[in-house]
Amino acid sequence: MERNQTAYVILGILAIHPHQSGYEIRKTIQQSVGFFWGESYGQIYPTLKRLAAEGLIAPSRSAAAPRPNRQQYSITPAGQARLKEWLAVPARDNPPRDEFLLKLFFGLDAPPGVSEAHIRRFQQNNRRMLATLQELERLGRERSSHYPGFPFWILTLQYGVGQLKAALEWSDAALAALSGSPSQQLTDGDAQ
Amino acid sequence: MERNQTAYVILGILAIHPHQSGYEIRKTIQQSVGFFWGESYGQIYPTLKRLAAEGLIAPSRSAAAPRPNRQQYSITPAGQARLKEWLAVPARDNPPRDEFLLKLFFGLDAPPGVSEAHIRRFQQNNRRMLATLQELERLGRERSSHYPGFPFWILTLQYGVGQLKAALEWSDAALAALSGSPSQQLTDGDAQ
DNA sequence: ACACACATGTAATTGGTTACATGATTTC
DNA sequence: GAAATCATGTAACCAATTACATGTGTGT
Image: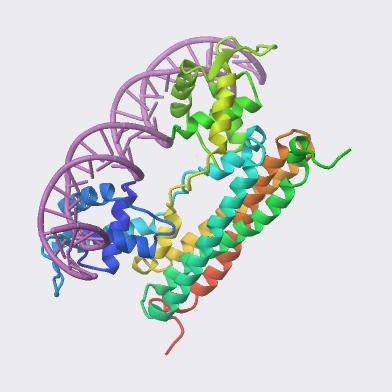
């Protein structure tokens, strides 16, 4: 079992939409799983070559073939099998690295106000993201709810929404907590 | 500004606890920020050498020097400055890659029951983690609440707790949703 | 004597990003 | 004709993990 995850995103995407080129695959990824998964061309194109060499995908051509200067691929039966195999294996937890939390943790060594600023930026990013996801969910229900994969997609979306809402609630509490004791030692504008 | 984050964790840790060796630094990392940050020796030792060469840390020796066969370091004024600089820069968002969500998204192509199993495993992991964090918080309040950095540490903990609770609520809803339509097409144990 | 934790490191590999290079096609 | 987007790729680099190698000190 490989650990190269790019291969499996590609297989998964091609299992849903056949006849896609590297360029299209990347767009599909962004539009469907973009909020929790990213891929760069530098990863996609070499992987496509390798998957084709291994017989897990094969060059193909959609009925209404649009442009000539692109190479479309589809998943092969072997590819389907490999995807299925991988899907059955428990997910490894993602490497634990959160730069925002790290900077917050070292807040005592930061210039005054910096941690508060980090949290406010975090809050704004999360608000924007939440709006995007909610809009996505609305649009999806309108346009794609008949797709067989829709229930799974909506679950991932709802997970994102839940995490963002929790993060936003925390942000408020965190800002309130920081305006209490710690910065007072430096700001100290009211005593005496 | 470097992008090597290992350097900054080390600087940050040494800013809090001086006179630590690579081995101790790693333990400190695990015990303090371990639930959202990890470092391996393969990363720590070379980075220590480099930081010393750059004058951001320096070999040092604690008053009660314990074992001889280890090299302790402390942060230098230059290192303090670098850390402070880095802390002021907005955190980049962590690379968006969640293998669990990816497998869930492709749930339609998975063997029946697999997605449910993934969610249940996820749920169990989160429950365990939540218990750990809550215990950590309890212990911390008992033993370390007088440390000046305590408020920041507790904030990161509370963030983790909030995310885990949201994930657990989602898990229940997700399992309920999956026991509705999608697996019925295959299981279909009750009609006819 | 043995096991375990302490302690430091290197080599190989990989997974991945970024920047660069190039050209075709569509649209205004 | 210019600009934007479509489209495919390569090279350089890097951060990081894993596995390996080696030795010391402590407790039983």
